[in-house]
Amino acid sequence: MARIGFIGLGNMGGPMAANLVRAGHAVAGYDLSAAALEALAAGGGTAAASAAEAAKGAEIVITMLPAGQHVRDVWLHQGGLIEIAKATGALLIDCSTIDVDSARVVAAAAEAAGLAMLDAPVSGGTTGALAGTLTFMVGGSEDAFARGLPILHAMGRNIFHAGGPGAGQAVKICNNMMLSINMVGVAEGFILAQKLGLDWGKLHEICSTATANSWALSSYCPAPGPVPAAPSNRDYAPGFMAALMLKDAKLAQEAAEATGAPTPLAAQALSLYQAVVDAGDGARDFSVVFRWLSQQKR
Image (cartoon, rainbow, N blue to C red):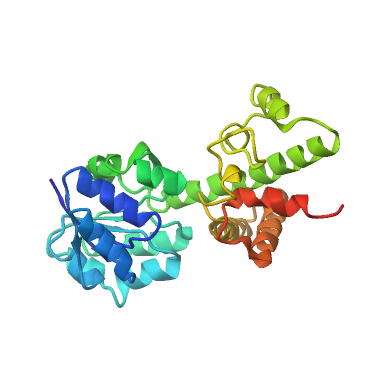
């Protein structure tokens, strides 16, 4: 059993912390939401009064926060978690999806303090967080990865070591960039199929065994009907919110601009998700891009 401090108990962090409790770990958590703290306590965790209190005495400190600025602030500035973690030599794990530069800055500060840190963003959405089946894309040293592996396995099914500091964030950005493009492509295919008089169920049956197959098509079909468990059959309840896909699409474009990588399709996907969010569907699942496109004229 490990003593774990967990900061950020939102839609993803809350279920992840709960899975750690269920795995037998002692989890002290902090979040700005009183309801999130109450949920952790009701599940057997401990509600802390601050991020610093959650991290005090912990062997593992985990953060799951909205953006790079929050990660920097909690670890380096007002939160000061790196300084607090020095007392126990804790392993530091950030599961947020943020820019690569922020991940590397925080990891370098941790290393300077004599601590090991992993950037470990996740894929799998709230469904995977609840079920404990997340995929973790991990950056950091081999030793730190080995040390963190048992903890990550309590929250996920597929755990990959991507490389050194920042590599986990780099993989996550590339993954979600490809996913955003793929989902738009699947949505367009089903819209065209309807215009051509095709049955969506037949299209799904055929294409999911052909060269167009993908996770967005076979498991998460944006058109209502073919995949009963998909958000498209629950009025696009997330899942993974369109606003979060927009955030990740922006991170991908920032990385592309910084490196000179040509990403014209990703840029187009970004503009579409911006339109979806501007239309008021940011809190819907990102596959709602299908419904938005269906309402557009050529």
